[in-house]
Image (cartoon, rainbow, N blue to C red; front, side, top):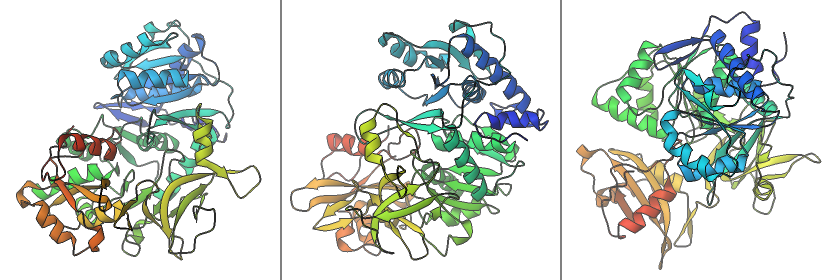
Length: 526
């Protein structure tokens, strides 16, 4: 059997093993087989090849979660291209930057997003060729090679070639393009599948955008296994998604804290139970300890995985489900085949129990940022071997004597108040222990007397009638006095990035403009 060295080898192996009839994907209620996925990808690869795409050229994908997305990813790879996933919510200005920065030769886009992509294409002096794709249909009429033959032999690329550029938001300015090679992504897939204990019989739900690497890897893991991906466009319609989980017999439920908060709120109104689910995974933000009990009620037969990662290496660590009670608050150890360690700001090893900057070593570390050698140098540091580069996450962690990691915060997130350092994550975890608090986001804001004041934005259950005073009083049971938020603002909801994370920068900017410090209620809805 041919070794799986390239991402599209995963799909070709399904054909080599005679698994053409297995269901690869369920999207918009329609089932597609591995044979159909391969045939459609080969057809698209032919269109791209005859349109002039060469090895290493970039293909931007502006698509919803759909069959067309899966076809476009594998079609691009089989043509020797590098896929550039763009969130479908991206506006024209940002899309213009991504298309220009990546040098995309082709844009595959959903016609429903024409307002965004037309505006972007009109601003570019040399716009990419356009292929329209919607749902289960890919229309090549916008591309010069509309009547091409399918490509049966993939383009000659090697594992060190780029497979994807994944754009991720920076703390300032334009997004950064994370370069991932075939070799890195194939390695990562094997590591994820190993520790999640997945099999070819799993049915993996994906409500996360495929433009988010957490969503993308659900598709890639399914294809690597010959499993089935149940692809939903979003988590917007809760009832519809939960019915899909039941009817499609989903066994793997990946989510982020905002998804689980919504799910738990629905469970409290009317009990939910999904006994067919055997794995529940969380990343993107820390899962509050208080969610664990409710999630076990909703998914009584599931292993619950807490994980930590960042786009620059996909995944850093995971906590074995059997250790949730033994290691509360931990995000576990390094994923299989990788290594993590902590060093101080001056480059010295950090003893167990003390805070240091997390560094990651392994084949999954990015090749760098596209067109940004300055930012690449900031993130990739000299490693243990001559010429090796390791990822400096710039995240603060503690590691216990057994090697388990505990997230403290970003180096630029730590709040300095009254001469003390406060971790926003620690305060958020404490606030989640107060009954009635659904979500909490903590930031530091300038204060003439304190240096920085601890400000908490709270989404509470309406029936609890929580007030800022009551929240502050109850939080003193869990926090030292200097950590108790001096400013508490009740919100109807928190602004989120397209990946489901709470957007603290947007929250802070909009709230400062909209409300004085003394405000006790602020509508932070998007």
